[in-house]
Length: 283
Image (cartoon, rainbow, N blue to C red; front, side, top):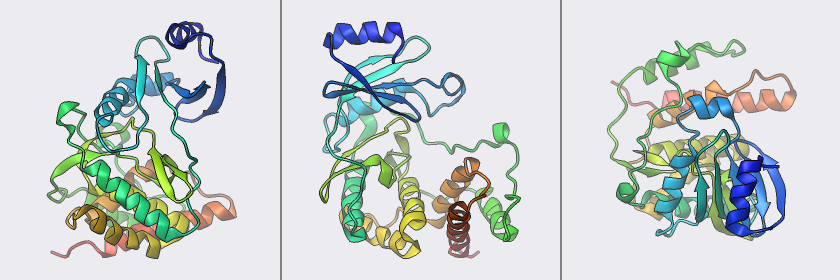
C-alpha cells in the first residue's frame, strides 16, 4: 500500500475510496475507484535518473490535456516526500494488441502522427538526450556474448559522429506496443509519459520499430515507416542513425542471454543492429 502521507493526501482528494494494487514496474500502480495512483518508489532513480521525474510527467500530461492524444488526465500531483505520486484518470482498454499486424501498424502510426503534431511550447518540456552518457557510463563495449563484434564496433563508430539534422518536435521517447491500450481494433490510450520531451521524431520511430522487429520480424518493422509517412505526411524523420542510437540505449539494459528464448531475442536484436549499420549513408 502507499505510505501513510500519500494515503492521507489521497483521502483528502477522493475520500474513503478503496485502494487496490495494480502492479509494480517503474511505478507502483494502484486502482483508486476509476482513477489510477502512480507512486514513484525507486529512491535511487529519483536521486539520479533525469528520466524518472514525476514533475516532468505531470507537465507533459497537462500539455496533452488539450490535444487529441488519448493520454490519462492528471487529477493531482504530490511531488514532495520520498515517494512522489500522480493521480490520473484510468483509461479503458488493455495492452493486448490485435492479432493482425496491419491493424497494429495503422493504428500506431496514426497515433504517433497525432503525438508528433503536438505543439510543446505551452509546457516547455525537457530536451531529448540519450540514456547513455559517456561521462557516466564510460566507453561503450562490445557485448561479450556476441559472435559478430564488428557489428557493434561499427555501431559505436557511427554513434561517435554528429547526428543527422532533424527538426525537433514533441515525442513520447519510449513509444512501443506495451504503452498502447486497445479496445477491439482501436487504440484508446497511450500511457507512461515520464520521458515525454522535445527531440528528433526518429527516436519514436526507432523505438517502435525495434520492438516490432523483436516481436513481429524485420519486414513488419519496415512496413511501419510507410504507415507513419501516410498518417503524418512526414517522410524525412527516419534515419538509420536513430535506429542505432536507440539500440545503443537498449543495450544498457540488455541482460546476457541464457535461455533459448533469450538467445533468439538477442539474435534478432543483433540482426536489427546489423541491418541499421548496413543502411547507413556512405561517405
